[in-house]
Image (cartoon, rainbow, N blue to C red):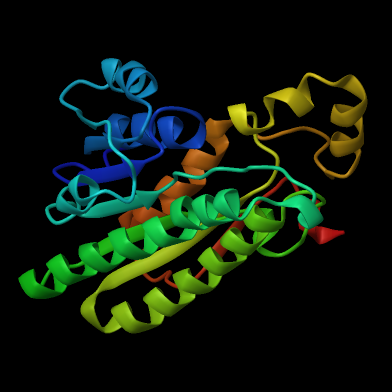
Length: 239
């Protein structure tokens, strides 16, 4: 399929994991991809396999990131961090950094995206990468859970206000996915077994499976979908 032929797509968090998989999937379907990540090495690896792509090795909250949004038809807010701490000892600096990356950056980029499209009178699509922790809490994840639940409601707020302008805003809520964020957990057989037991499909997702859902929501096939959060969690939240 070439669902994004002739479109320009900005993907944050493109240096690894879900962001990398989304960037590659969009490119396969015809998009001109702009990959953005603070990790220049990872970003270079991603874009090396995407002919015609562009790289922005900058912080997701930077002015350079904002400047790249205006001429894109698709915005994928996939950048995210998880800094694990007991709530009683959670450093405020890391709490703040988590909200800056996971919530403030999608707000700023989506707002700039919306301004550009409303001014031009054009439609567009935004997909935010939320989490199953937009719905539930897990130990040691207070900042991450707060940021991802906030992102779910931010998705709805943007969707409501931007619908009259033809700009769709949706989110995907991944379950446990094989990324660097949980590599240490997956290396522990006992913890892996406990997590797998909680998932009805009895396995972890691949980044490519998350990318497929994200690209669907960004595509014309989802032209009547806005304000939705698609849970791609192997059935975790059905329990």
